[in-house]
Length: 167
Image 1 (cartoon, rainbow, N blue to C red):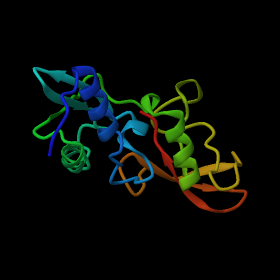
Image 2 (image 1 turned 180 degrees about the vertical axis):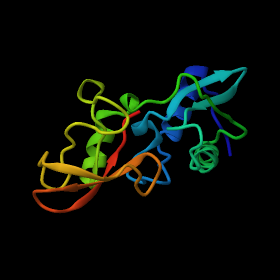
Image 3 (image 1 turned 45 degrees about the horizontal axis):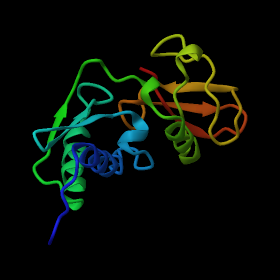
């Protein structure tokens, strides 16, 4: 196979595009780019380096995400990339893209409130139901199917739903 030489900028973009296709294994409608977990892609001495930040420091999905990034890069002809986890600054839901928030809602998970609409990690003031849009909702459990979600219920349509917690 003949490969054309790429500039560092072209290689960086190819690597970013490939890494951005990796989905979160816990919420497969979101890519790691949607989540803001994909922080940076750089090229140093012809080698690609990818920086990712977990949604929280103990996130069990990071090992799988790292492996999926490596595989995605290999598929586009970038072997032996360095994928590193960066813990500072800590990830925040403010890094989530607007497209990612819309994907969550369409999937049935209430997206996190923007920084201006929340008061604390626990006890968001008004979380809209992703099914009917009502804000007449209540928390059932601060802990949902994954550590980053809480279980809520809509009082209008009576449907339970996950809320992606703010941090």
